[in-house]
Image (cartoon, rainbow, N blue to C red; front, side, top):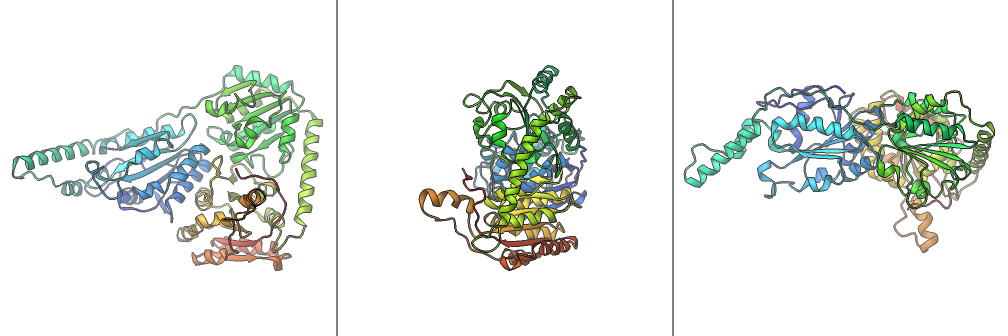
Length: 588
Protein backbone atom coordinates (compact mmCIF):
# COMPACT_ATOMS: atom_id res chain seq x y z
CA UNK A 1 0.00 0.00 0.00
CA UNK A 2 1.78 3.20 -1.12
CA UNK A 3 2.03 6.24 1.09
CA UNK A 4 2.30 9.84 -0.02
CA UNK A 5 3.16 12.55 2.46
CA UNK A 6 3.74 16.27 3.00
CA UNK A 7 0.57 18.21 3.53
CA UNK A 8 0.99 21.97 3.69
CA UNK A 9 -1.29 23.58 6.23
CA UNK A 10 -0.69 27.31 5.96
CA UNK A 11 2.50 28.18 7.83
CA UNK A 12 2.80 24.62 9.09
CA UNK A 13 3.72 21.48 7.17
CA UNK A 14 3.38 18.32 9.28
CA UNK A 15 3.66 14.98 7.52
CA UNK A 16 0.25 13.42 7.26
CA UNK A 17 -0.13 10.15 5.45
CA UNK A 18 -2.31 10.72 2.43
CA UNK A 19 -2.83 7.51 0.48
CA UNK A 20 -4.68 5.21 2.84
CA UNK A 21 -6.57 3.25 0.23
CA UNK A 22 -5.71 2.59 -3.38
CA UNK A 23 -8.52 4.81 -4.66
CA UNK A 24 -7.50 7.83 -2.55
CA UNK A 25 -10.96 8.32 -1.06
CA UNK A 26 -11.79 9.34 2.49
CA UNK A 27 -15.29 9.31 3.93
CA UNK A 28 -16.22 11.99 6.42
CA UNK A 29 -18.70 14.40 7.86
CA UNK A 30 -17.35 17.88 8.32
CA UNK A 31 -16.45 19.55 11.61
CA UNK A 32 -14.19 22.33 12.81
CA UNK A 33 -11.92 19.97 14.71
CA UNK A 34 -10.91 18.16 11.51
CA UNK A 35 -11.04 20.95 8.91
CA UNK A 36 -7.21 20.99 8.48
CA UNK A 37 -7.19 17.28 7.59
CA UNK A 38 -9.94 17.68 5.00
CA UNK A 39 -8.55 20.83 3.38
CA UNK A 40 -5.00 19.49 3.22
CA UNK A 41 -6.21 16.19 1.77
CA UNK A 42 -8.13 18.04 -0.93
CA UNK A 43 -4.98 19.98 -1.84
CA UNK A 44 -3.01 16.83 -2.60
CA UNK A 45 -5.77 15.16 -4.59
CA UNK A 46 -7.51 12.87 -2.12
CA UNK A 47 -11.22 12.69 -2.87
CA UNK A 48 -13.27 13.66 0.16
CA UNK A 49 -16.78 12.16 0.18
CA UNK A 50 -18.91 13.75 2.89
CA UNK A 51 -22.05 12.01 4.10
CA UNK A 52 -25.21 13.05 5.93
CA UNK A 53 -24.40 11.06 9.07
CA UNK A 54 -21.09 10.01 10.60
CA UNK A 55 -22.18 6.39 10.92
CA UNK A 56 -22.54 6.28 7.12
CA UNK A 57 -18.95 7.45 6.70
CA UNK A 58 -17.67 4.48 8.71
CA UNK A 59 -20.01 2.03 6.97
CA UNK A 60 -18.66 3.33 3.64
CA UNK A 61 -15.08 2.88 4.85
CA UNK A 62 -15.98 -0.66 5.93
CA UNK A 63 -17.28 -1.45 2.41
CA UNK A 64 -14.15 0.03 0.83
CA UNK A 65 -11.94 -2.14 3.02
CA UNK A 66 -13.88 -5.28 2.09
CA UNK A 67 -13.93 -4.64 -1.66
CA UNK A 68 -10.47 -3.14 -2.12
CA UNK A 69 -8.46 -5.34 0.24
CA UNK A 70 -6.96 -2.21 1.79
CA UNK A 71 -7.80 -0.05 4.80
CA UNK A 72 -11.00 2.00 4.60
CA UNK A 73 -10.76 5.46 6.13
CA UNK A 74 -13.30 7.67 7.86
CA UNK A 75 -12.65 11.05 9.45
CA UNK A 76 -15.17 12.70 11.77
CA UNK A 77 -15.29 15.56 14.21
CA UNK A 78 -14.99 15.36 17.99
CA UNK A 79 -17.59 14.45 20.61
CA UNK A 80 -20.99 13.68 19.05
CA UNK A 81 -19.33 13.18 15.67
CA UNK A 82 -17.40 10.28 17.12
CA UNK A 83 -20.17 8.90 19.30
CA UNK A 84 -22.32 8.69 16.16
CA UNK A 85 -19.86 6.16 14.71
CA UNK A 86 -19.86 3.66 17.56
CA UNK A 87 -22.34 1.22 15.97
CA UNK A 88 -20.43 1.15 12.68
CA UNK A 89 -17.09 0.69 14.43
CA UNK A 90 -18.47 -2.24 16.43
CA UNK A 91 -19.89 -3.68 13.23
CA UNK A 92 -16.46 -3.44 11.59
CA UNK A 93 -14.90 -5.13 14.62
CA UNK A 94 -17.27 -8.09 14.42
CA UNK A 95 -17.03 -8.23 10.61
CA UNK A 96 -13.20 -8.17 10.87
CA UNK A 97 -12.89 -5.16 8.56
CA UNK A 98 -9.69 -3.09 8.69
CA UNK A 99 -10.96 0.48 9.10
CA UNK A 100 -9.06 3.56 10.23
CA UNK A 101 -11.23 6.05 12.10
CA UNK A 102 -9.66 9.47 12.61
CA UNK A 103 -11.36 11.82 15.00
CA UNK A 104 -10.91 15.35 16.17
CA UNK A 105 -10.50 16.27 19.82
CA UNK A 106 -10.21 19.25 22.12
CA UNK A 107 -6.78 20.88 22.41
CA UNK A 108 -4.36 18.93 24.59
CA UNK A 109 -4.27 21.48 27.43
CA UNK A 110 -8.05 21.90 27.44
CA UNK A 111 -9.04 18.27 27.87
CA UNK A 112 -11.21 17.81 30.92
CA UNK A 113 -11.70 21.58 31.29
CA UNK A 114 -15.07 21.93 29.59
CA UNK A 115 -13.95 22.53 26.00
CA UNK A 116 -16.52 22.22 23.21
CA UNK A 117 -17.41 18.57 22.47
CA UNK A 118 -14.73 17.30 24.85
CA UNK A 119 -15.36 13.79 26.21
CA UNK A 120 -13.21 10.78 27.05
CA UNK A 121 -13.17 9.37 23.53
CA UNK A 122 -10.56 6.73 24.30
CA UNK A 123 -12.84 5.11 26.85
CA UNK A 124 -15.42 4.61 24.09
CA UNK A 125 -13.15 3.15 21.45
CA UNK A 126 -10.63 1.03 23.35
CA UNK A 127 -13.12 -1.86 23.73
CA UNK A 128 -13.98 -1.63 20.00
CA UNK A 129 -10.63 -1.12 18.32
CA UNK A 130 -7.43 -3.11 17.98
CA UNK A 131 -5.36 0.03 18.39
CA UNK A 132 -6.15 3.45 19.89
CA UNK A 133 -3.83 6.43 20.13
CA UNK A 134 -3.88 10.15 20.78
CA UNK A 135 -1.41 12.24 18.78
CA UNK A 136 0.10 14.75 21.20
CA UNK A 137 2.97 16.06 19.03
CA UNK A 138 3.06 16.94 15.35
CA UNK A 139 6.15 14.78 14.80
CA UNK A 140 4.19 11.73 15.96
CA UNK A 141 1.49 11.89 13.28
CA UNK A 142 3.18 9.68 10.68
CA UNK A 143 4.54 7.05 13.11
CA UNK A 144 1.14 6.78 14.77
CA UNK A 145 -0.68 6.29 11.48
CA UNK A 146 1.86 3.66 10.35
CA UNK A 147 1.37 1.73 13.58
CA UNK A 148 -2.42 1.97 13.31
CA UNK A 149 -2.46 0.70 9.73
CA UNK A 150 -0.30 -2.24 10.62
CA UNK A 151 -2.54 -3.14 13.55
CA UNK A 152 -5.69 -2.83 11.43
CA UNK A 153 -4.47 -5.44 8.93
CA UNK A 154 -2.44 -7.80 11.11
CA UNK A 155 -3.72 -11.00 12.68
CA UNK A 156 -7.49 -10.78 12.70
CA UNK A 157 -8.21 -7.45 10.97
CA UNK A 158 -10.34 -4.82 12.62
CA UNK A 159 -10.90 -1.11 13.23
CA UNK A 160 -8.33 1.25 14.71
CA UNK A 161 -8.78 4.77 16.07
CA UNK A 162 -6.52 7.82 16.14
CA UNK A 163 -7.51 10.96 18.03
CA UNK A 164 -6.14 14.26 16.76
CA UNK A 165 -6.36 17.13 19.27
CA UNK A 166 -7.05 20.37 17.47
CA UNK A 167 -3.65 21.86 18.39
CA UNK A 168 -1.69 19.25 16.40
CA UNK A 169 -3.67 20.06 13.25
CA UNK A 170 -3.94 23.85 13.05
CA UNK A 171 -1.08 26.21 11.96
CA UNK A 172 1.63 27.17 14.43
CA UNK A 173 0.80 30.89 14.54
CA UNK A 174 -2.89 30.25 15.15
CA UNK A 175 -2.17 27.74 17.94
CA UNK A 176 0.35 30.13 19.52
CA UNK A 177 -2.18 32.94 19.45
CA UNK A 178 -4.90 30.81 20.98
CA UNK A 179 -2.58 29.61 23.75
CA UNK A 180 -1.88 33.22 24.69
CA UNK A 181 1.71 32.48 25.71
CA UNK A 182 2.91 36.10 26.10
CA UNK A 183 6.67 36.53 26.75
CA UNK A 184 6.17 39.96 28.42
CA UNK A 185 3.60 38.91 31.01
CA UNK A 186 3.70 40.76 34.35
CA UNK A 187 3.68 39.07 37.70
CA UNK A 188 5.39 35.85 38.82
CA UNK A 189 2.36 33.62 38.29
CA UNK A 190 1.71 35.02 34.81
CA UNK A 191 5.37 34.59 33.82
CA UNK A 192 5.35 30.97 35.06
CA UNK A 193 2.20 30.23 33.10
CA UNK A 194 3.68 31.93 30.02
CA UNK A 195 6.89 29.93 30.34
CA UNK A 196 4.91 26.67 30.64
CA UNK A 197 2.76 27.49 27.61
CA UNK A 198 5.78 28.44 25.47
CA UNK A 199 7.50 25.19 26.40
CA UNK A 200 4.35 23.24 25.59
CA UNK A 201 4.10 24.98 22.23
CA UNK A 202 7.75 24.31 21.46
CA UNK A 203 7.42 20.62 22.29
CA UNK A 204 4.16 20.38 20.34
CA UNK A 205 5.82 21.53 17.10
CA UNK A 206 9.41 20.36 17.67
CA UNK A 207 10.59 18.29 14.70
CA UNK A 208 7.40 18.98 12.75
CA UNK A 209 9.34 19.84 9.58
CA UNK A 210 11.74 16.89 9.71
CA UNK A 211 11.53 13.99 7.28
CA UNK A 212 9.60 10.95 8.48
CA UNK A 213 9.77 7.37 7.22
CA UNK A 214 6.37 6.87 5.57
CA UNK A 215 6.84 3.37 4.14
CA UNK A 216 4.24 0.82 5.27
CA UNK A 217 5.10 -1.42 8.20
CA UNK A 218 4.92 -5.17 7.47
CA UNK A 219 1.58 -6.82 8.13
CA UNK A 220 1.63 -9.95 10.28
CA UNK A 221 -0.72 -12.84 9.48
CA UNK A 222 -0.92 -16.37 10.88
CA UNK A 223 -0.68 -19.27 8.42
CA UNK A 224 -1.36 -22.97 8.70
CA UNK A 225 1.70 -25.21 8.91
CA UNK A 226 2.42 -27.82 6.20
CA UNK A 227 1.73 -30.54 8.78
CA UNK A 228 -1.73 -29.10 9.53
CA UNK A 229 -2.60 -28.86 5.82
CA UNK A 230 -1.43 -32.43 5.25
CA UNK A 231 -3.53 -33.69 8.16
CA UNK A 232 -6.59 -31.91 6.78
CA UNK A 233 -5.94 -33.31 3.31
CA UNK A 234 -5.88 -36.87 4.66
CA UNK A 235 -9.23 -36.40 6.39
CA UNK A 236 -10.83 -34.96 3.25
CA UNK A 237 -9.30 -37.57 0.94
CA UNK A 238 -10.74 -40.42 3.02
CA UNK A 239 -14.18 -38.84 3.39
CA UNK A 240 -17.28 -40.19 1.67
CA UNK A 241 -19.47 -37.17 2.42
CA UNK A 242 -17.24 -34.10 2.89
CA UNK A 243 -18.76 -30.66 3.26
CA UNK A 244 -17.09 -27.24 3.07
CA UNK A 245 -18.43 -24.10 4.77
CA UNK A 246 -16.67 -20.95 3.61
CA UNK A 247 -17.07 -17.82 5.76
CA UNK A 248 -16.26 -14.14 5.41
CA UNK A 249 -12.74 -14.38 6.81
CA UNK A 250 -11.73 -16.49 3.80
CA UNK A 251 -12.11 -13.40 1.59
CA UNK A 252 -9.37 -11.42 3.36
CA UNK A 253 -6.00 -10.66 1.75
CA UNK A 254 -3.51 -11.96 0.83
CA UNK A 255 -5.59 -14.46 -1.20
CA UNK A 256 -7.54 -12.88 -4.05
CA UNK A 257 -11.12 -13.81 -4.85
CA UNK A 258 -10.06 -15.45 -8.11
CA UNK A 259 -7.38 -17.53 -6.37
CA UNK A 260 -9.84 -18.63 -3.72
CA UNK A 261 -12.49 -19.52 -6.26
CA UNK A 262 -10.01 -21.65 -8.22
CA UNK A 263 -8.94 -23.43 -5.02
CA UNK A 264 -12.51 -24.24 -3.93
CA UNK A 265 -13.38 -25.52 -7.39
CA UNK A 266 -10.23 -27.64 -7.47
CA UNK A 267 -11.06 -29.22 -4.10
CA UNK A 268 -14.46 -30.08 -5.56
CA UNK A 269 -16.23 -30.62 -2.25
CA UNK A 270 -19.88 -29.50 -2.00
CA UNK A 271 -19.87 -26.19 -0.20
CA UNK A 272 -22.05 -23.57 1.41
CA UNK A 273 -21.03 -19.92 1.25
CA UNK A 274 -21.92 -17.35 3.87
CA UNK A 275 -21.36 -13.67 4.58
CA UNK A 276 -18.76 -12.05 2.35
CA UNK A 277 -18.01 -15.35 0.62
CA UNK A 278 -21.47 -15.37 -0.99
CA UNK A 279 -20.97 -15.13 -4.73
CA UNK A 280 -17.47 -16.62 -4.60
CA UNK A 281 -18.41 -19.34 -7.11
CA UNK A 282 -20.59 -17.15 -9.30
CA UNK A 283 -24.27 -17.35 -10.03
CA UNK A 284 -24.36 -21.07 -10.89
CA UNK A 285 -21.88 -23.64 -9.64
CA UNK A 286 -22.03 -27.41 -9.64
CA UNK A 287 -20.53 -27.64 -6.16
CA UNK A 288 -22.29 -24.75 -4.39
CA UNK A 289 -25.35 -25.67 -2.35
CA UNK A 290 -27.85 -23.12 -1.09
CA UNK A 291 -30.64 -25.06 0.60
CA UNK A 292 -31.10 -27.42 3.56
CA UNK A 293 -27.67 -26.82 5.03
CA UNK A 294 -28.70 -28.23 8.39
CA UNK A 295 -29.54 -31.62 6.86
CA UNK A 296 -26.26 -31.72 4.96
CA UNK A 297 -24.29 -30.96 8.13
CA UNK A 298 -25.96 -33.84 9.97
CA UNK A 299 -25.07 -36.29 7.19
CA UNK A 300 -21.50 -35.19 6.41
CA UNK A 301 -18.63 -37.31 7.68
CA UNK A 302 -16.01 -34.53 7.35
CA UNK A 303 -16.89 -30.84 7.79
CA UNK A 304 -14.49 -28.03 6.97
CA UNK A 305 -15.31 -24.78 8.80
CA UNK A 306 -13.04 -22.37 6.92
CA UNK A 307 -13.45 -18.85 8.26
CA UNK A 308 -16.83 -19.93 9.63
CA UNK A 309 -17.67 -19.50 13.31
CA UNK A 310 -19.86 -21.72 15.48
CA UNK A 311 -22.03 -18.89 16.78
CA UNK A 312 -25.80 -18.40 16.45
CA UNK A 313 -25.53 -18.88 12.68
CA UNK A 314 -24.55 -22.52 13.21
CA UNK A 315 -26.68 -23.11 16.29
CA UNK A 316 -23.54 -22.61 18.42
CA UNK A 317 -22.24 -25.86 16.91
CA UNK A 318 -25.32 -27.95 17.63
CA UNK A 319 -26.14 -28.38 13.93
CA UNK A 320 -22.85 -30.16 13.24
CA UNK A 321 -22.99 -33.94 12.89
CA UNK A 322 -21.81 -35.60 16.08
CA UNK A 323 -19.89 -38.30 14.23
CA UNK A 324 -18.28 -35.98 11.71
CA UNK A 325 -14.59 -35.12 11.77
CA UNK A 326 -14.45 -31.33 11.95
CA UNK A 327 -11.62 -29.22 10.55
CA UNK A 328 -11.81 -25.62 11.78
CA UNK A 329 -9.65 -22.81 10.38
CA UNK A 330 -9.63 -19.25 11.66
CA UNK A 331 -7.11 -16.47 12.30
CA UNK A 332 -8.51 -15.79 15.76
CA UNK A 333 -8.17 -18.47 18.41
CA UNK A 334 -11.30 -17.40 20.30
CA UNK A 335 -13.40 -17.59 17.13
CA UNK A 336 -11.72 -20.83 16.11
CA UNK A 337 -12.91 -22.57 19.26
CA UNK A 338 -16.17 -20.69 19.82
CA UNK A 339 -18.55 -22.95 21.84
CA UNK A 340 -16.28 -25.98 21.34
CA UNK A 341 -16.55 -26.66 25.06
CA UNK A 342 -20.34 -26.99 24.81
CA UNK A 343 -21.76 -28.43 21.60
CA UNK A 344 -18.94 -29.52 19.32
CA UNK A 345 -15.25 -30.38 19.25
CA UNK A 346 -12.80 -29.87 16.39
CA UNK A 347 -10.83 -32.86 15.16
CA UNK A 348 -8.27 -30.44 13.77
CA UNK A 349 -8.14 -26.78 14.87
CA UNK A 350 -5.91 -24.61 12.68
CA UNK A 351 -5.09 -21.06 13.66
CA UNK A 352 -4.26 -19.56 10.30
CA UNK A 353 -5.51 -17.57 7.34
CA UNK A 354 -8.50 -19.42 5.83
CA UNK A 355 -8.00 -18.29 2.23
CA UNK A 356 -4.36 -19.36 2.13
CA UNK A 357 -5.30 -22.64 3.81
CA UNK A 358 -7.76 -23.50 1.02
CA UNK A 359 -5.18 -22.70 -1.67
CA UNK A 360 -2.59 -25.00 -0.11
CA UNK A 361 -5.21 -27.67 0.62
CA UNK A 362 -6.24 -27.67 -3.05
CA UNK A 363 -2.63 -28.29 -4.05
CA UNK A 364 -2.37 -31.15 -1.52
CA UNK A 365 -5.58 -32.78 -2.83
CA UNK A 366 -4.78 -32.40 -6.52
CA UNK A 367 -6.49 -35.13 -8.56
CA UNK A 368 -8.95 -36.22 -5.88
CA UNK A 369 -12.66 -36.21 -6.81
CA UNK A 370 -15.65 -36.02 -4.53
CA UNK A 371 -18.15 -38.87 -4.60
CA UNK A 372 -20.75 -38.12 -7.30
CA UNK A 373 -23.61 -39.72 -5.35
CA UNK A 374 -23.07 -37.29 -2.46
CA UNK A 375 -22.99 -34.30 -4.80
CA UNK A 376 -26.09 -35.46 -6.67
CA UNK A 377 -28.04 -35.97 -3.44
CA UNK A 378 -27.37 -32.42 -2.30
CA UNK A 379 -28.04 -30.95 -5.75
CA UNK A 380 -31.41 -32.67 -5.99
CA UNK A 381 -32.38 -31.23 -2.61
CA UNK A 382 -31.44 -27.78 -3.84
CA UNK A 383 -33.51 -28.18 -6.98
CA UNK A 384 -36.48 -29.44 -4.97
CA UNK A 385 -36.45 -26.44 -2.62
CA UNK A 386 -36.01 -24.00 -5.49
CA UNK A 387 -38.97 -25.54 -7.35
CA UNK A 388 -41.10 -25.03 -4.25
CA UNK A 389 -39.82 -21.45 -3.89
CA UNK A 390 -40.86 -20.77 -7.48
CA UNK A 391 -44.35 -22.01 -6.69
CA UNK A 392 -44.41 -19.69 -3.66
CA UNK A 393 -43.74 -16.77 -5.99
CA UNK A 394 -47.00 -17.50 -7.81
CA UNK A 395 -49.15 -17.52 -4.67
CA UNK A 396 -51.52 -14.65 -4.06
CA UNK A 397 -50.83 -12.50 -1.02
CA UNK A 398 -53.20 -10.60 1.24
CA UNK A 399 -52.53 -7.31 -0.58
CA UNK A 400 -50.03 -5.67 -2.93
CA UNK A 401 -47.26 -7.81 -4.51
CA UNK A 402 -45.72 -11.15 -3.63
CA UNK A 403 -42.21 -10.35 -2.33
CA UNK A 404 -40.77 -13.57 -3.76
CA UNK A 405 -42.02 -12.68 -7.21
CA UNK A 406 -40.53 -9.18 -6.94
CA UNK A 407 -37.14 -10.58 -5.93
CA UNK A 408 -37.17 -13.23 -8.64
CA UNK A 409 -37.79 -10.52 -11.22
CA UNK A 410 -34.93 -8.52 -9.71
CA UNK A 411 -32.68 -11.58 -9.88
CA UNK A 412 -33.31 -11.79 -13.61
CA UNK A 413 -32.87 -8.05 -14.16
CA UNK A 414 -29.59 -7.60 -12.29
CA UNK A 415 -26.45 -7.08 -14.39
CA UNK A 416 -23.68 -9.65 -14.45
CA UNK A 417 -21.39 -7.30 -12.51
CA UNK A 418 -23.98 -6.31 -9.89
CA UNK A 419 -22.98 -5.78 -6.26
CA UNK A 420 -25.79 -6.38 -3.76
CA UNK A 421 -25.93 -4.58 -0.41
CA UNK A 422 -28.24 -6.30 2.07
CA UNK A 423 -29.83 -4.01 4.67
CA UNK A 424 -32.98 -5.28 6.32
CA UNK A 425 -34.76 -8.11 8.08
CA UNK A 426 -37.61 -10.05 6.55
CA UNK A 427 -37.34 -8.83 2.95
CA UNK A 428 -33.56 -9.26 2.97
CA UNK A 429 -33.94 -12.72 4.53
CA UNK A 430 -36.12 -13.68 1.57
CA UNK A 431 -33.64 -12.10 -0.85
CA UNK A 432 -30.87 -14.31 0.56
CA UNK A 433 -32.80 -17.33 -0.75
CA UNK A 434 -33.63 -15.83 -4.14
CA UNK A 435 -30.95 -13.37 -5.26
CA UNK A 436 -27.72 -14.95 -6.50
CA UNK A 437 -24.56 -12.85 -6.21
CA UNK A 438 -22.71 -12.74 -9.52
CA UNK A 439 -19.13 -13.23 -8.34
CA UNK A 440 -16.58 -12.82 -5.54
CA UNK A 441 -17.16 -9.77 -3.33
CA UNK A 442 -20.52 -9.04 -4.97
CA UNK A 443 -22.53 -9.39 -1.76
CA UNK A 444 -22.25 -7.06 1.24
CA UNK A 445 -24.13 -7.67 4.46
CA UNK A 446 -23.38 -6.33 7.95
CA UNK A 447 -22.05 -9.63 9.29
CA UNK A 448 -22.39 -11.19 12.73
CA UNK A 449 -23.58 -8.00 14.44
CA UNK A 450 -26.76 -7.96 12.33
CA UNK A 451 -26.71 -4.17 12.12
CA UNK A 452 -29.53 -2.30 10.40
CA UNK A 453 -28.62 0.91 8.59
CA UNK A 454 -25.57 -0.23 6.62
CA UNK A 455 -27.30 0.29 3.26
CA UNK A 456 -26.36 3.86 2.35
CA UNK A 457 -22.77 3.60 3.53
CA UNK A 458 -22.06 0.17 2.10
CA UNK A 459 -23.53 1.17 -1.27
CA UNK A 460 -21.50 4.38 -1.30
CA UNK A 461 -18.26 2.53 -0.59
CA UNK A 462 -19.10 -0.20 -3.11
CA UNK A 463 -19.85 2.23 -5.93
CA UNK A 464 -16.67 4.20 -5.26
CA UNK A 465 -14.66 0.98 -5.45
CA UNK A 466 -16.52 -0.35 -8.50
CA UNK A 467 -17.69 2.69 -10.45
CA UNK A 468 -18.61 0.66 -13.54
CA UNK A 469 -20.74 -1.91 -11.71
CA UNK A 470 -24.42 -1.89 -10.83
CA UNK A 471 -24.77 -1.43 -7.08
CA UNK A 472 -28.10 -2.48 -5.55
CA UNK A 473 -29.36 -1.85 -2.04
CA UNK A 474 -31.98 -4.35 -0.90
CA UNK A 475 -33.80 -2.45 1.84
CA UNK A 476 -36.56 -3.39 4.21
CA UNK A 477 -38.89 -0.46 4.79
CA UNK A 478 -37.69 -0.31 8.39
CA UNK A 479 -33.99 -0.23 7.54
CA UNK A 480 -34.52 2.29 4.73
CA UNK A 481 -35.29 4.91 7.35
CA UNK A 482 -31.74 4.76 8.66
CA UNK A 483 -29.93 5.92 5.54
CA UNK A 484 -32.38 7.12 2.89
CA UNK A 485 -30.99 10.64 3.41
CA UNK A 486 -27.77 9.41 1.81
CA UNK A 487 -29.50 9.69 -1.57
CA UNK A 488 -28.40 13.29 -1.18
CA UNK A 489 -24.80 12.07 -0.88
CA UNK A 490 -25.18 9.88 -3.96
CA UNK A 491 -26.57 12.84 -5.92
CA UNK A 492 -24.04 15.46 -4.80
CA UNK A 493 -21.03 13.23 -5.45
CA UNK A 494 -22.29 11.67 -8.67
CA UNK A 495 -22.27 8.17 -7.20
CA UNK A 496 -25.46 6.53 -8.51
CA UNK A 497 -26.95 3.45 -6.85
CA UNK A 498 -30.09 1.38 -7.31
CA UNK A 499 -32.27 0.66 -4.29
CA UNK A 500 -35.37 -1.44 -3.82
CA UNK A 501 -37.46 -1.05 -0.68
CA UNK A 502 -39.52 -4.10 0.29
CA UNK A 503 -42.37 -2.04 1.73
CA UNK A 504 -44.70 -4.19 3.86
CA UNK A 505 -45.49 -1.39 6.35
CA UNK A 506 -43.90 -3.09 9.32
CA UNK A 507 -40.94 -4.52 11.17
CA UNK A 508 -42.01 -7.93 9.93
CA UNK A 509 -38.99 -9.88 11.11
CA UNK A 510 -39.86 -8.91 14.68
CA UNK A 511 -43.61 -9.18 14.22
CA UNK A 512 -43.25 -12.81 13.08
CA UNK A 513 -42.38 -13.81 16.65
CA UNK A 514 -43.88 -11.07 18.75
CA UNK A 515 -47.49 -11.52 17.62
CA UNK A 516 -47.70 -15.34 18.07
CA UNK A 517 -45.80 -15.30 21.39
CA UNK A 518 -47.17 -12.14 23.03
CA UNK A 519 -50.35 -11.43 21.09
CA UNK A 520 -49.43 -7.85 20.24
CA UNK A 521 -47.94 -6.02 17.27
CA UNK A 522 -46.95 -3.00 19.36
CA UNK A 523 -44.03 -0.98 17.90
CA UNK A 524 -43.92 -3.23 14.81
CA UNK A 525 -46.34 -1.33 12.55
CA UNK A 526 -45.25 1.20 9.95
CA UNK A 527 -47.15 2.85 7.06
CA UNK A 528 -46.92 2.28 3.34
CA UNK A 529 -44.84 5.43 2.90
CA UNK A 530 -43.72 6.97 -0.39
CA UNK A 531 -40.03 6.10 -0.19
CA UNK A 532 -39.76 6.77 -3.92
CA UNK A 533 -40.83 10.38 -3.37
CA UNK A 534 -38.49 10.78 -0.39
CA UNK A 535 -35.58 9.73 -2.60
CA UNK A 536 -36.74 12.09 -5.34
CA UNK A 537 -36.56 14.91 -2.82
CA UNK A 538 -32.86 14.10 -2.49
CA UNK A 539 -32.31 14.24 -6.25
CA UNK A 540 -32.90 10.58 -7.15
CA UNK A 541 -35.44 9.03 -9.51
CA UNK A 542 -38.32 7.18 -7.85
CA UNK A 543 -40.49 4.29 -9.03
CA UNK A 544 -43.40 2.61 -7.29
CA UNK A 545 -44.71 -0.89 -7.94
CA UNK A 546 -47.97 -2.30 -6.53
CA UNK A 547 -50.55 -4.96 -7.30
CA UNK A 548 -51.60 -3.16 -10.47
CA UNK A 549 -48.05 -3.61 -11.79
CA UNK A 550 -47.96 -7.38 -11.38
CA UNK A 551 -47.38 -7.87 -15.11
CA UNK A 552 -45.02 -4.91 -15.44
CA UNK A 553 -42.42 -5.62 -12.76
CA UNK A 554 -39.69 -6.45 -15.27
CA UNK A 555 -40.49 -3.26 -17.21
CA UNK A 556 -40.15 -1.15 -14.05
CA UNK A 557 -36.78 -2.70 -13.30
CA UNK A 558 -35.67 -2.01 -16.88
CA UNK A 559 -36.82 1.63 -16.64
CA UNK A 560 -34.97 2.02 -13.33
CA UNK A 561 -31.79 0.63 -14.87
CA UNK A 562 -32.07 3.06 -17.77
CA UNK A 563 -32.21 5.99 -15.34
CA UNK A 564 -29.25 4.53 -13.49
CA UNK A 565 -27.23 4.36 -16.71
CA UNK A 566 -27.87 8.08 -17.13
CA UNK A 567 -26.13 8.68 -13.80
CA UNK A 568 -29.25 8.93 -11.63
CA UNK A 569 -29.70 7.12 -8.34
CA UNK A 570 -32.95 5.20 -8.24
CA UNK A 571 -35.31 4.12 -5.47
CA UNK A 572 -37.94 1.48 -6.26
CA UNK A 573 -40.71 1.43 -3.70
CA UNK A 574 -42.12 -2.11 -3.91
CA UNK A 575 -45.34 -2.49 -1.94
CA UNK A 576 -45.46 -6.11 -0.81
CA UNK A 577 -47.88 -8.29 1.13
CA UNK A 578 -47.43 -10.98 3.76
CA UNK A 579 -46.45 -14.57 2.98
CA UNK A 580 -45.62 -17.63 5.07
CA UNK A 581 -42.22 -17.94 3.36
CA UNK A 582 -39.50 -18.44 5.98
CA UNK A 583 -42.19 -18.97 8.62
CA UNK A 584 -40.53 -19.84 11.91
CA UNK A 585 -37.42 -17.76 11.23
CA UNK A 586 -36.25 -15.92 14.33
CA UNK A 587 -34.74 -12.50 14.95
CA UNK A 588 -32.85 -13.22 18.18
